[in-house]
Length: 329
Image 1 (cartoon, one colour):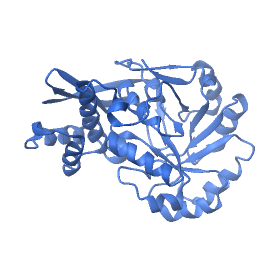
Image 2 (image 1 turned 135 degrees about the horizontal axis):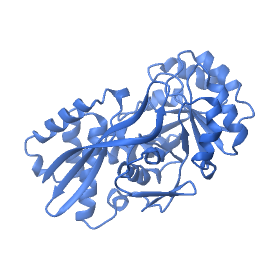
Image 3 (image 1 turned 45 degrees about the vertical axis):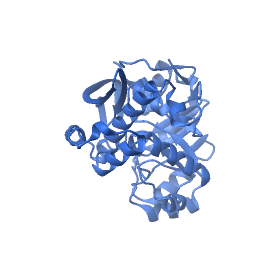
Image 4 (image 1 turned 90 degrees about the vertical axis):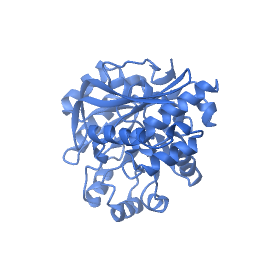
């Protein structure tokens, strides 16, 4: 059994700006797992929000390589126990786990969904996301990237001027909108006042408007908001379901935060059982990572799989998109 970590720099088609940062290049990683003549690949998409730096990924992978008897791993659960014991960044855990799963699926001559025991879909509808930009640039962006083909549009906003972009997009488009604050607000009263201004606009839900630590504020806001609230940064690998039920109507599961296929699937299943709306999301990833999210999205109500469409130098071609629907190539 051999394990290899490689850098996977992804150049972006345009500046990716959200409320807390912006970027034009993403420094992802590729994990290779080789067993006999079989190989599986996994992607690592670090997120600085969780202190997942390049150095932490590389150091974490070294600690995994130094783990005694890792060549004796025989099962998913055994691998996941090792990864948890090493306290690795969640994105690295998923990269290693998914490389293993893909290798084992190949060795067993089955598809990845079949190996994982989940439904296998041929196509998944996804939203497309507007990064934060000047309001007078929005319609040109919409036309340039032919965004009318998507069922939903996602809009990144900040707390300073969130409404102008939303009104502009609602005026020239016909799709329902998902609004994503990425923890931009600090005052729940301001968030509530913002939601009141959305009357008449086709909004599916508001995603993570305040910091994840503001649990009391979310409980207060959920009791008063007429716009459903979707947890993103508040949902990591070990969900506090009681807290989530008090503060949110839905959850956005990302495999890079769940740390493994198995945990991501479990999170979606538990969320469904508790009556949450569910979404499978992504970071900025190549089609390798997006293909993994594609499998998980078979279990969710919404999908946000557009991370690969932002990449200018996508190297794998594992996922195709047509008419706002994603397919495995």
